Every structure is written in C-alpha cells, then in structure tokens.
Length: 204
Image (cartoon, rainbow, N blue to C red; front, side):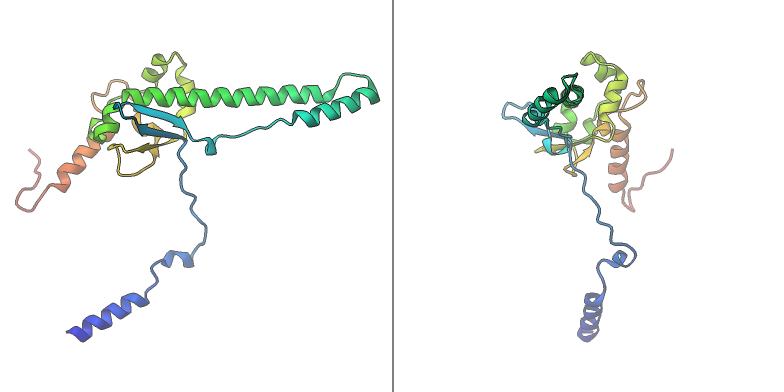
C-alpha cells in the first residue's frame, strides 16, 4: 500500500499543472479597478479614482510658443497651431469632466449601498440608474455610460470575497424589483450549500 501511494504521488508530480498552455499562450490581463473605496475611521467610505486607468493628455505649451512664433514671422497669418491648442484644451477639459462624473456616480452608489459594502451581498439594495441619476441631478444615459465597463475595488469591505467587482453589480435594471437579483441569488446559494442528505430542500 505505501508503495502504491508513492507511485501515485510520483505520477501526479509528473503531470502538467497548466495543460491549457499547449493550446495558447495569451496572457490574461487582470482587471484594473477604476474606483477605489476605502473605509474611514468614522464608519463612512472614501471614494477615489484610480489615476492609472484615466487617459492623459499633456499639452506642450513651450513647444507651441516656439512654433507659433516662427510661423507668425514667416507667414503673418492666423496660426494653425492655435486651433490645435484649442482642440487639445477642449479634450483635456472633457476628460477632466468625465473623471469627475465617474467619481460623483461612484460616490452616490457607495452612499446608497453602504449596507452591501459593510455587511455583504445579502444587504445589496435594489438600486437602478434612474435613482442614482436623480440623486446627483444627471441624465440617466450619462450614468449608464460612466458605469459601463467600470470596476470598483473596496478595501476592508465585506461585500465580496473578490477584491474587484463590476460597478453595475450594485445596480439593477427593473425599477420595481423588491430585492436585488444578486442578493436573491446569494441567498439561494447559501440555502443550497447548507443542504444535507438528511435535510434536503424540497418543493412544496
């Protein structure tokens, strides 16, 4: 018996723990959170953006000054560089506005889902896009856009075992639902896991 056990262990050790690598070597990019949520000492939540995920536009004004001075002397006409600078400034302001909108939406979601963050998914409240939009005086389509493909990472929160989750996880589509569908699924999962051979769930 010990000899057979040793042979089985040796065979297991010879196996490839990553057999899928034979069929592809594409590295999976881990999801980076767009928003961080941290628990404050007073029991509230601090929400901040992950600057690493925000697009950045830098305007080299020194280069613009040199080029525009040269063109002014050479042509004496309206500078095409001025239009480029104006477009760049507009883009910078638009990106800044988008970042502030994401932050406002995330702060409102965190405020309304305090129980979810503090105690877990069973406390996830029914919350839709319109409720969030009305609370921060924005259009529902704006809230929909800024929450699409956005992820949140809570620190020291009981909401999920995973450290990062989809921001839409906190929202629901149907405004008349009495309970969050995620909370209902979590409760069903708990009931199934607690089921035993002697105490099985039966349909009545």
